[in-house]
Image 1 (cartoon, rainbow, N blue to C red):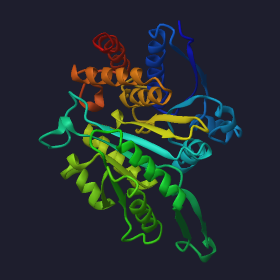
Image 2 (cartoon, rainbow, N blue to C red):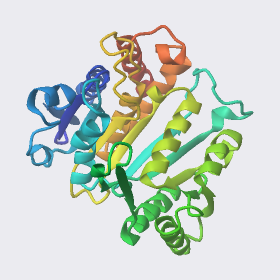
Image 3 (cartoon, rainbow, N blue to C red):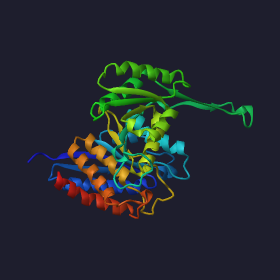
Image 4 (cartoon, rainbow, N blue to C red):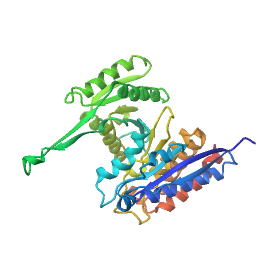
Length: 365
């Protein structure tokens, strides 16, 4: 018998429905571990960081929070944000503190059109659509460079300055990541998205790096779009999309558009990766904390469970990741849909179905 692979997870449920969907995701992961014949197991350390923690302690996480989780194999994250705490405080104080603290510079967000999900997109081959957003996750528009000043000029005359940071190194590593990812897919294509006609310094640098790096990948098809035209392309010609790489802000916005077209933000998974594996990577669904439905048991767990599949793949459990994704597909194919997808099933119901379908897809494998 081979030795059990033991993985230590830092679990941060966060705020709102984050607590509910992370609970369901962990239920799936523990079930898979129990059914693995001793091949792998999870040890989970829970951290109560988030807006409630902020209201009690005046900070979103412990001062040494990054240090406390740096030796974990992965981070499983719920959501951040809740009424009473400004969004910029909650985001910078927790999620971005972890992403930037661990240099999780590559964010991947697959756009999956799951079977049985009501179509938001009028396309003749919608079932065949599948693309992935690659988001630069360490600099760009989320660099936090700027400030507010000159309030002394009087009411209505304050000045705020917000600057983006683009480095040649940062651009090159995310663009190469996108090309390497494209080589693993059936269609080898990378689309670069900028707004370099208006942002003539940082994004022109991005364009120049993209042109240079593309020469090292002659087997990969390329094209380039301005972000406003790309938004239209998502709707009008999604069959042209495969791997889309963009800056921190643009990929964030486009990934929400892609997820909405696929049915709901509730089905969208994501991974914040440190590809060199110097630090742990973090896995989270794309949706927010949704305080309006928190505590009602109706949150969609699919995005968070799909993020668990990305985590399994990252941890080297690639067969298990495939099985989990197939179980999600089988669940939606059976019409077991949560409220945001037009169904009547609650959070626990959907998770129960995914766990049940894990046995089915494992038998069929």
